[in-house]
Image (cartoon, rainbow, N blue to C red; front, side, top):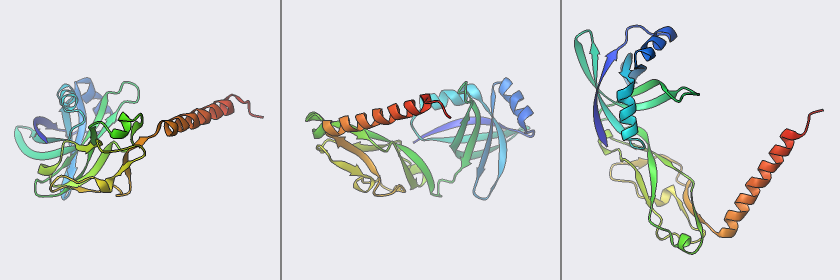
Length: 213
């Protein structure tokens, strides 16, 4: 897991009007909170945060934040807990940082990456990934960048569930053990799924076009 150094400013004024002023200055309103700690409003440089998120997209990043407040500084380790986006422009409107301790377990979502070519695909089947992220619990230093799922041995109709995956050392999976992760569909099954989806779409379109009485 990557650790990124970033300086942020402590905000002493909050509210929608102040948030707009910060955004006009190229800053993103943010907050940091965590167990046993008072929430602290922050301001983050928009260009710097977007550059980091773009460079490490799809990965978990640990932020070593330097909180600057009228000449004094405080160090805090944190993960991005939530990003709020503008519904039209897709610009980041707000960031929630979650303060962590390297000695305290955290729960995070990690992307699932499929590797290998399944035997069932070589035989004409279609691979369908049903789960794209895994919720895990572990110490911050053990957070994996991704969970690799090797599908090489999967044949036609085979399914891999969460229980079939071995977690990395020091990591616990929190998802339902019976949750399917990936399966190999036979061509007929794939066609059936597609036809059913098309039929549902046609029915919905017909319903929408039928004038109400």
